[in-house]
Image 1 (tube, protein in one colour):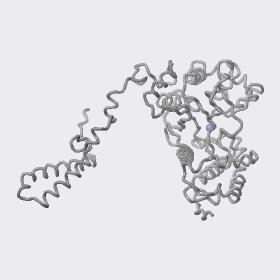
Image 2 (cartoon, rainbow, N blue to C red):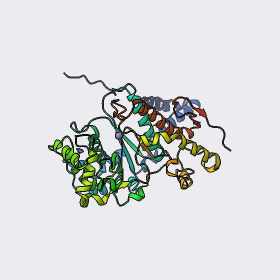
Image 3 (cartoon, protein in one colour):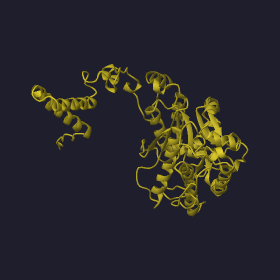
Image 4 (cartoon, helix red, strand yellow):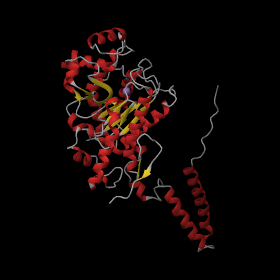
Length: 437
Ligand code: MN
């Protein structure tokens, strides 16, 4: 069937331009009559001409400034040298090999100098399933969990990509993230770090900044404890729900190795059995990415170990069961600090030079661990979208905990907009902040 081509309707900007062009033509014809109708007609002509000139900056005779502009997006595209994107064998697929990625990225950055020179550029990648959630309030939770991440990224100047398709049809569940991370690395050569954050994780300290300087010699950062992985052989010795992975060849190679444990590979069942025999506390028989990473750390330490950092000094991700009960007290600690220290309660722009999380960081040095806001609260096992939570938890504990954590985080955002939540369990009630002294 041939679909008849419908010409697109004139965009408003274009219609305006045409009106001025018609007016200009009309005014041009006035010139011949200008001898007889000087005065008002000439003034009108000049006025219309000047208006037209403003709306038509590409006209060299009417806009000398435009002709001095060195490049327009159009000319830039025409003169661009080829990049790795022009290579016919470039693939975004997590199963495809990439060669010389570091060099390709370096060349791309050299041609796009606006992005060069920052080793702190972060792209957050997160996502969820393509279809509506089965849990009756699952989509509500996903929206709030996404808003939470968007808020954090806006405040800290990070980009964010939300993926809600299965980029590799066989890589479902926790394996889906590697297809998204791999595609994001190619799509965002300007990003030094891809920061995967599970949809069921909430950022609960909006001021905290990733200590990227600390990871300058590493390419993968996960929350974890080396002795639990290497000595205890525990599958929860690390967590793969939140990870920072550098956009580099090493990471491409690691993922190529890592996904061999996945459901798209030929030995998925065999790996499941092997991982379970090695990490005895592993709950599920299926091969999972978290235990696979622990396996690589143990069995191929020489190859990967040096570049993998296990973070345990702060909650790169924290187990929600340990955290949600403390949030009310933590909020009170911060409020008490604000009452005492003027610089902490000062009003400030949501972002900008006069404020950064460093103010809290400085003050918090004297705080005990539990009194600090946890950076990320991970609702592992709650499964907000499907509702099929781990049987060890009560559904109400999961949902109440998520509401509390999300309100705890959102309260930090709202304060910069002049409001606060008096009750962390009540999502809809806000009050204006009182005037600050
Ligand atoms: Mn998770």
